[in-house]
Amino acid sequence: MGVGAIEHYAEWIPDGMPADAVQKLYQGAGALSGGSKGKVMKFAFGVECVEVRVNARTREIRVPRIVGAFAGGRIMNMRTARSQLMGGMIWGIGSALHEATAIDRPSARYVNRDIAEYLMPVNADIRQIEVLFVPEVDTEVNPAGVKGLGELGNVGTAAAIANAVYHATGVRVRDLPIRIDALIQA
Image (cartoon, rainbow, N blue to C red; front, side):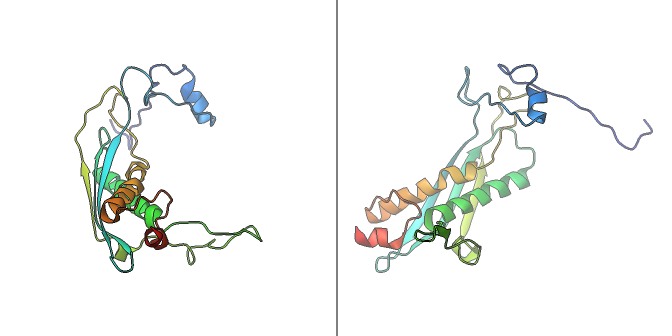
């Protein structure tokens, strides 16, 4: 064709959305469709399974292994999707065991307002992490069969850790992060 680039522009509007949905989206007024609305479910699904080790004496919690299996429709870039889900599972470990915002009540200020004072997981906390993709073809969600993975890796991780801690200790902890004192007091 003798040109340096070929560009094709297309718009697709899901069933049940107004005809001007794309124009409104460009103006910052997004609308939701799909999901549990309509005849079929249009979600990405995932499950996280964790192994925890709780020190019998100190009650220190470690997560030596975590496996996540995800069905996210057609995966356009396997490497970035895997990294997104792996990062979400690591975020979930941090949410379950480390991350908390501390506020000094008298001054109404954050005590841990920077990375130096905010606990989060590091490489030593993450030993074995595995991401599995469940093959899924879903042309109901959109013509390409693509679903958003977003925070899917994070959603169930903290709950899976809390359940594993319960099975290891018999103590049901319902507040995050799960602290050693919650296990000692029980």
